[in-house]
Length: 356
Image (cartoon, rainbow, N blue to C red; front, side, top):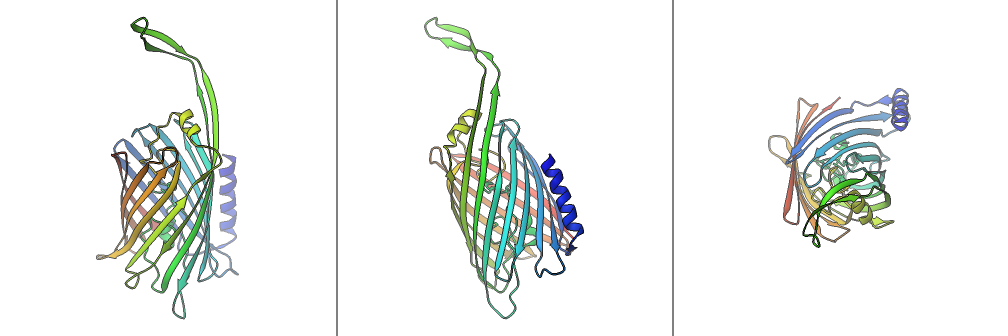
């Protein structure tokens, strides 16, 4: 709590001391699925000092989700992002994230840092920025990411953000983004003694058995480097992209899964819900952002995530549609599906973002 109070004071002081550009935003999303409900609120703020050519974009989001799908969980996620375009080609971005499952007593915290390089053509290329990564229903991506699943894409272009629908600038030849996550996962489980009925084969009847109390802790550090490349086509009417990544662990995450009683099921890979954001081994995604008639922007994506504990694969699919009304109101509809072991999990998200 002290951390968030200090963070709020810092943002207030930074805002008061800077000249704010007219591209700030506030957004709210709701999501639902079979046994799942949640919401996400987010905002971004462009901060530009008088002697700085390009602004710094700060973003802050809070996401909540409750599900009874596979394993009951109640999760909260807080994300703080900072984005800066150093020039017409280089962009730097970073996130700080804290995630907690209050039912299963699992949590993680850490950050993401990344760089985007954009190849431009023409005499006056337009600077671009890469948005803060989302872990909400739309993310982690991880979720993770999932991560991620703050919706920073509303105010910036989409390199490195697979759920953005923003078209690439007309003068962009291509963009390459290198990101790296570093998260520390932990769980502290305390179980009191209980009495249960078990079948005794020798006595051929049910008997009462006392399960003694137990406590346990487990931690592991996860590193996740991943790279995204995009290439605009047809005068930026379509922008295909490819993302690949690999996960490293300081300790086998199976200990956390077993202690918390979580099943090895990653149908929610890349989302806030599910297997602690996903203890994965490898991940990849291909997709295309397309400008459609009636001023619709879209994103179509297909991905795969390999679970580290048993090397099984989950596939992910998704479609996002957005449209801007009255120059300030951005409306979003999203459908995403994850399939593993023949079991599918669908989530539907609707949201509105107002740009000042």
